[in-house]
Image (cartoon, rainbow, N blue to C red; front, side, top):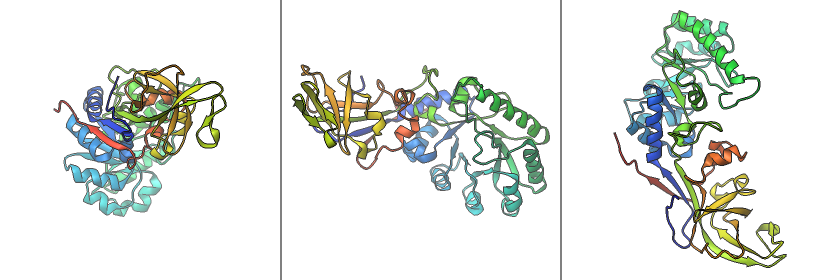
Length: 372
């Protein structure tokens, strides 16, 4: 059982294990033969951009991807010897040049409109696939974009896409179809241009297939942070990296008909003992994670029955005196991981992690134990 603290009325705490991030990165570097692109968008999945990038760098990562120009610049300020790929299209061409940021070439129209400003910038051509956020929408557009880029002396170093179905196992085999379409596009593109970087796979695709033939890199997000990309994924080298915990600040005995919480949100239908935990939705804990689910106290699970802005209520056994004021209540941890609740329908791994409130939680980083 993971134990971080056990002090009466301690603040709720978010603990991030940088050693777990380091181990995950080392494993994924091995899986990709060194071709790992670490996705650190949205403040590194809300693990903290600087801490995550520094940890992945220590593990040997030298290629990072994000959606934000601001975050791309923050990464460049940390290291001048890494590649940085910006997933979103960007028209701030001077910043891309000044900070040596590789950019997305989003479409033929984008190239036609901006080709006179795109010099001395490295680009990766995007295939829209079934995600369709941006990117070329047909094989014809891909080939025309490559030809115009070459004619315009645009530095076209890579080609990429995103597999939107890789974490699904539907009856239509949608992932296999989108992968087949991509491989067809890639084959045609490689006949007319030699790309230094070919990257398409996310965490789920890499887990399912390993690094695909004719691909130099995989662009991995959630697996780096200790969450498997789909139910049934191999957990052998998965290191859960996050612990969210509060403490029991009071214990109440309720008579039949007595209630607790907003608008009597929990009403006892028999004599009941409840514990009040000092963490609530104001700390970024999802209501869907609480209601109908449980919490870990002293190695045992107890049901959660009510939620407030700064508190949650746990239902204890009526005759159980083992839970005391000051005991730790773990919502996420090694023995009660985020992904368990993903698979129970609470929300995506990142959806549960992203709201956690760094301002109200005590934020603790556990260091890397064995650096390279």
